[in-house]
Amino acid sequence: MNDKIIALVDGSVYAASVCEHAGWLAARSGMPVELLHVLGRRSPAPSQDLSGTIRLGARSALLDELASLDEQRARLANAQGRALLEDARNLTLGAGAARVETRLEQGDLIAHATGKAAGPALIVIGKRGEAADFAADHPGSNLERVVRAAKVPVLVAARAFRPIASVMLAFDGGASAMKAVDHVASSPVFDGLRIEVAMAAPVNREAQVQLEEAILRLRAAGRDARAELLDGSADSALIARIEQQDHDLLVMGAYGHSRIRRLIIGSVTTRMLIDSRRSVLLFR
Image (cartoon, rainbow, N blue to C red; front, side, top):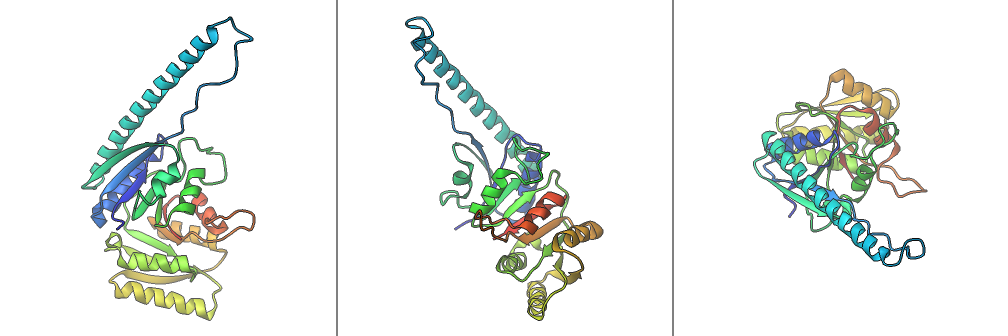
């Protein structure tokens, strides 16, 4: 049974926010946190034949020296990873988590974070990673890969944590939006929070009925929920509403597909991740 929060930490400016969001979620849900830092794959020493360009016997000594240097770099990376995780653990405990474990791995981030052995109930990741190009008009590459691979909700942490009292749930009547409604209704994380379920107009009768049913579902679970119909395109209207109402968290489905690439993150979702200064909880 999935019963832990996995928080992905690195050396980026988002790491502190990831830890604080994980601590907040843990305090409200009672789940433990596992902090995961994944080192990249080690590159082997060069194997090309250098004997024709350097003196006889020097090639073996050079390769030995390169192997030694590679080992030193690996030890340093491990030491830095352990130090990063220890700092992250203290920050997560300070943010409210009662139980925090750390895990240092090497290899593929996605396999370690989303594989069957990981078994998270929820994943927390920063909007951008340590090596992200901040000039790029796109979320971090690891974020997209994690959302695509995860079978559980993914909280995408903004650059800074802010106390969460008010939530906007972006609703379109789709399967991922309904999954988000069910989660907000049932999870203790949302106890006592204000919930606004926002839908961009125009909407057909079926969507209107789905919106009303979502509100009834949330209220039946004891949530302080209300509906809001917005004018304008979905992304711009939702962003404007978040700022106007000063919501602290955006909840939405990760939807949309491309015929060129099998993307889970759709165009509206991507725009929201880029333009919103709030953290985003995504559902597939």
